[in-house]
Image 1: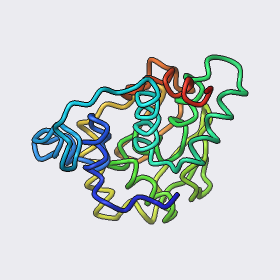
Image 2: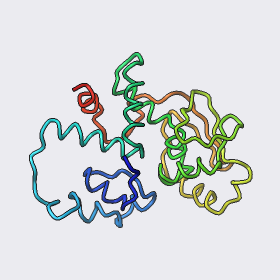
Image 3: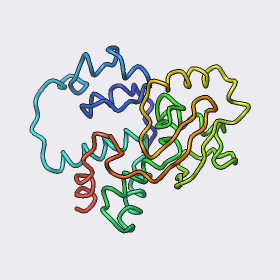
Length: 208
């Protein structure tokens, strides 16, 4: 499956909720879903009855697009979650939240997961003092995440530090915006994950 390169705001409208793919624009009235809260396309405003399978598929697509994953990547996370002890849906969301790109976004060191992924790939971050340029790297309890010294002077990181001051950091993370560092206090639990996803529908879809 090819990578999506079209307008990301269409994805939010298709899923009927904000996926926060455009950074700060998503928090303003300029967000297209505020003006057109219906699916894109010629027939977007028509009401359609959604089947049980359709609802499950939409939930999976929503989660996949929210975290910016390809189908195969997403399915691999599901298989790992299924093998792990506990509730499969909770395990799946925990794996997705522990991705380095998502963790950096949650810390406020990127305006979107998409930007976080790009910054990680360009080598702007360290984990426990070592440069990590793999967005899918899974953070662990106690990990220390930091912007590299050479990158701290970048105007973009200065802007991000100012913007992050107004954003809430989840309880499983700690952030020091002055030094542009963060720490994983503990692994995320379901109540820490404020994404509009009904994970049980995804489990049902893959269990067919």
